[in-house]
Length: 426
Image 1 (cartoon, rainbow, N blue to C red):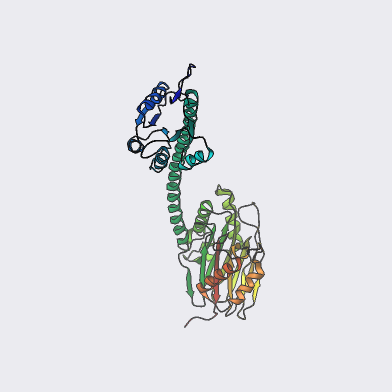
Image 2: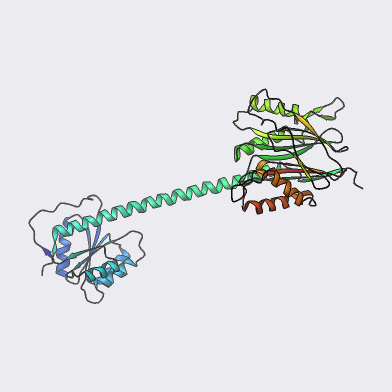
């Protein structure tokens, strides 16, 4: 029986002319291979031949074909077994496999598909049908190789993006270290009291900052800042503001004025915040604004003079554990010009303490979306009334995590705890 039926109609060259496909013809009959090879070569393909499945496998290992035309019935390794072995070869590109057979039963076709065949042709093979099946295979190969190339491009792009991300992540880690270094001391002891500071960003860097600076004789300046937004631009804003309230460069500190004798005197907090408001609006090209609370603590008497600019109210915990939260509220800094700010006094007695926190605590939500708010903070402070210094913040954060059920908080958290003993130590 001839392998290819005769037909006088001319068959056109392959649609993918210019792209030479390699076709492997596998048949134990040399005559049948010659007939198939003659037709396929006329269509512009490079042709390889093998008389057995084992020989065909060796060719596939050395010179992977694009398309395989294999007879089903062959001695030794038949076409089905060869197809199965072909599919197990570790090749990068897909090979399109057409099984030539006189079998037409559905269960036999199913076996062929299960072994990895892509298509079937019943012998004797019609030349037009063979060309059509090869063209279909070419389209599949084109799509597969286009997809492979796109996947390669995607993989390369992802590698480049990962490299950029790793570089940015490294830079952000360094930025976090630099931002944390703005708080030179996390705790400080004085003759009549002690100070603890805390800063935890919701990301690598954030817009919160807390700090202190020596003020007039026997006085201590405290500030807590929360810049709008998150990330690098907010962190840069806090770094600049830290310079304006520096404890190491008093001549640059806008809260201090130098006297003729070389000492420094604290300016009224309300005037300092007004000065910062003008500076942000007049000198800084930024859309950021910030909340601020500025305090002047008299270490001898326990009197605290504060001015509040949109920052949460200070929480005063008395020696008996009771908590008071109040203040003037005020308008954030950097939103509008001509704003006036007010100041108010808090009197601390022996055993009292003052907590200045950012809104990352009171506005922290639980799993139902309910915020902690001022009442929740007061309850936490009462539970922690015997916990002092840096340990207080560790316990506060632990309880906040328990309340929220979160591993990471949605906003930056910062705070200052000033505890007044009222009597010189020793």
